[in-house]
Length: 141
Image (cartoon, rainbow, N blue to C red):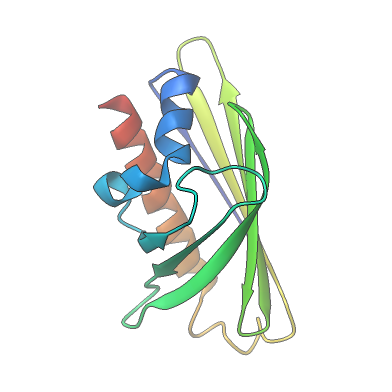
């Protein structure tokens, strides 16, 4: 399963990057990923963070490894839970006055078909859209 979404943000790429990569501020703007915890509160290659997501009633806690963090361009993190491997890629593209943030989330694993009722694609897409809208609002403030 692959979920792709993007959004245009009316802010500098520096502002969007700062908002996105400072985990200590996520509690102020992020309505999707909760209970953020990390030894190093910055998104940097090799760091990990834990958080929870609530697709429906019950929260699901997971840990992500930051595989790549190229300033103002790209962030990649991955993790696995319940036999599902997930990889999330964010691309930051500058235009004249805007920044386009694109999100591609890929899910693989033998149990992905069995857990579609817990993590249906339409719900994950909604959560991704909400996360991007939250980032836009915070970056434009």
